[in-house]
Image 1 (tube, rainbow, N blue to C red):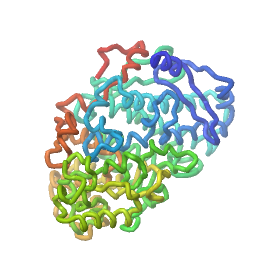
Image 2 (image 1 turned 120 degrees about the vertical axis):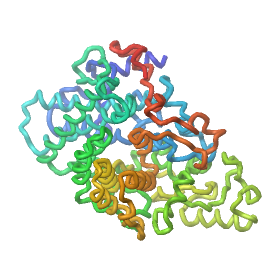
Image 3 (image 1 turned 180 degrees about the horizontal axis):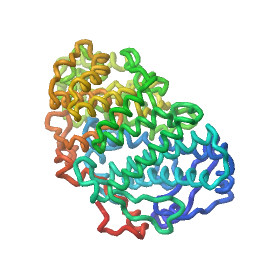
Image 4 (image 1 turned 60 degrees about the horizontal axis):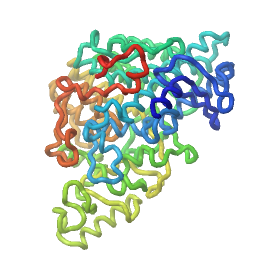
Amino acid sequence: MKNKMLNKITRKIYMLLLALSLIVTYSCSERYLDTVPTDSISEAAAFSNPDNIDLVLNGLHRQMYSSELNGGSGSRNGESHFLPSLDFISGEVIHTGPGFNWMKGEAQWLLHTNANSTTVFNFWYQRYHFVATSNAIINNVAASDFPETPQINRILGQAHAYRAWAYWRLVTTFSKGYIIGDPTTDPGVPLTDGLGISEGAPRGTVAEVYNQIENDIDSAIEFLKVASAPDNKSNISLNAAYGIKARVALSKGDWTTAATNAALAREGFPLLDEAGWDIGFNSVELSEVIWGSRIIDTESNFFSAYFYYISFMFNGGECRGNNKIIDIELYEDIPATDYRNKAWLPLAPNTNSAAYNGQGGSFEVDPNYDDAASFDAAKAAIIAEYGATSRHNTHPYMNVKFKQSRPGTNNPDDVIYMRSSEMVLIEAEAKAMMNDISGAQDALDILASERDSAFDKTAFTTQDALMDQIKFQRRVELWGEGFGYHDKIRWDEGIDHTNSGASLNIYGDGFIQERPSANDDWVFKIPQDEINANSFLTEADQN
């Protein structure tokens, strides 16, 4: 039944006018257009004028966080799901209890290694949805006689940027890392022009996919330089396009391009100060947010929301029964002079009787407490300070980095995709890899001295010392924001939870994983449905 439904889905683009968003759905294995008069508008109408094309583009803005993409499955849609999932796979964010067991399979390395899992299907499907919709925009504008205007340039700039972003997300997840592999021969992902291919496409090489990505992001930048200003931060601005280019360059070891574009991306987006950092990363209006989705109540995905997976105080069973913690060894390396140490609570009482470490439920098993009064008082103080409910559990090293704007509810908060802090760290890493010691020190100092009053850039005088510090800064600053998986691939680092606070009994295969260059399981399996539907792919193409 699933395959029959998939085949129907993969043979349509649905252009649904939903409020002010036109949601276009499209499968990577479908190669022609069909309209449904009862619930969609025709292709001709959708692309008949720039205002209508803007509606198509708005559909992509919404699909960045939505869980309602046709053909996808429930909660595993959008960056609301995939940002935290990539940090669970990489072991950067650690489960402490059963909750509702969301993303435990990712942490256990059971889902991205399974070609039949919903996780790989939706990651693949959604990214090709972005590719196909971007293709439709680009191809239809090219075939039109629209005059060049700032609006058209903004539309084309964002369409090229989305296509670059989508292919980059695909090739860095379903293929071997550029730096650790052989991009000229390693299989990448299919490159498709969307509506012009009859029966799918073969896998290009990693290098070929990167060539397409780089051409697209360069085109995006040129269009956006002469475009009208974006409506809000959910749009891909010129700064965000520079940021995407910096990420792409970093992932392939093009250090000069990475450093240059990271610096351009963060212009006009000053770093958060301590008060701003403490707000809790719940609003795109924070000064250093370059790109993110503003979530409004009427468009909330509630129990598919980003904060449901990552925040302590969201009122859902996953949050109440499964506090997410930082790697204990990483936390212990945060200096007392670094205000980010307040984002995790090392002495929070372990109130969950189902805690994986076997030390939860009462002061009698929690080594940090000697009596019921202090144990109960500590929980009560945390609940009061952060606005959770009495049903929420607490756990040592639990995260309070992500704070709900309306704590103790299941109301939505914004999803942040790009911050200037990340751009500073890209610049620092790129300069360190070029062995530009002073340049890397100066870039690192921009962020680290803001976060740590005692930071001394001159303590890091070699490439190795700088890279160790840059890795530390990324892991702390960007914790829970979805960077762990790709960072570990780029750095060729494995997973070892021996002293992290994770439970071997629960984590299973995810407890220890060899480095990516020696371990093909870091590469996502291609969805079996795609192997079956795409005539250019066979079982030999499976990762």
